[in-house]
Amino acid sequence: MRAVLNRIFFTTASIISLSSVASAVTLPENWKQPAAEVVVWFETSGTSSWGSVTPDFDYQGMSAGAFQWNIGKGSLRDNILKDISKSVFEASMPVYGKKFHTALHDTTNVALEYVRGFQTFRRPDLCKKGRGAEWTNDGKVFSQEISALMATKEVKAKQQKRIDADVKAGWEYASWWARAKRGPEASPTFVEVLFFTDTLNFNGEWKQLANYEKVKSFKGGRSNKEVLSQIATYLSSDIPDQLQIDEARKNTQLWGSINPTDDQTDLLAFSYLVAINLNKEGAKQFRFNTISRRGTIIFNDGFVNGERKKFSYPES
Image (cartoon, rainbow, N blue to C red):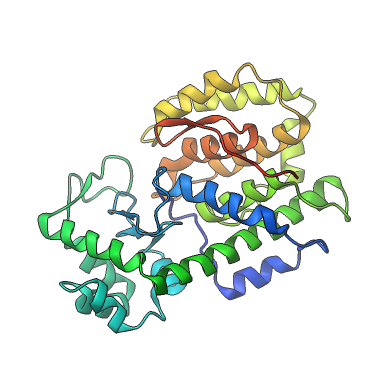
């Protein structure tokens, strides 16, 4: 699944803007694939497929690929498909490739209208939980062709290049956090790199409403356990229209017995500050899911996408 209106998709300029916080130490090579695999698992509900395709449940038209780039924010076009030749579209999408290529390279509204024409909606007026997007019969053919396009060698290469850039940007974002927390020579841990890569991918860059100083202010003089308790209470609260409510409730129980470290508490508090500030209409529904994803990363144990998940982390 893929969150939305608060998300900032990376352009060359945005990656360069993050490079000012990069540590002198480079991203360890053996961290790149594990970090990417975790984000892919979150994004594709565990299918880990280059060709994953999701209909317009989040008001973004359609999401596709390992990191679920979408139509609405232009990330599928700009980051992945912009330079793919029309011949690749037509070869992998014999029915709809020509028209999709034309629509994709028109305005975003034209592309959205085109892909939504292959879908039905229970509540088309909603851009939140309950929208109920489903493929029509023609849409099932269309989505299968999109999946085939995304799995071509040309598009897979574009996806991998984009994933590598996003993990590098996550490293730079994590370096900003590590230096603020531990001093100017600090380098991030793997968990921090993974945490901030997922933050960038799912929610965008947060430095004003969520940062180390605001985390310290939020914690006040409370113990780590008390901070965790407040966040767990939030996950069990009755906030309307949240996605993955059952997972949030299970995480409340699962994490309730943990005595978190300072590092774990600080990161969880950061995710909480991000979540409570997801105020745009299409992003509000991902408040619980934001904390569930980050908490699963922090504790390497949690419920997301309908199942309990642990990952294999490299040594930091």
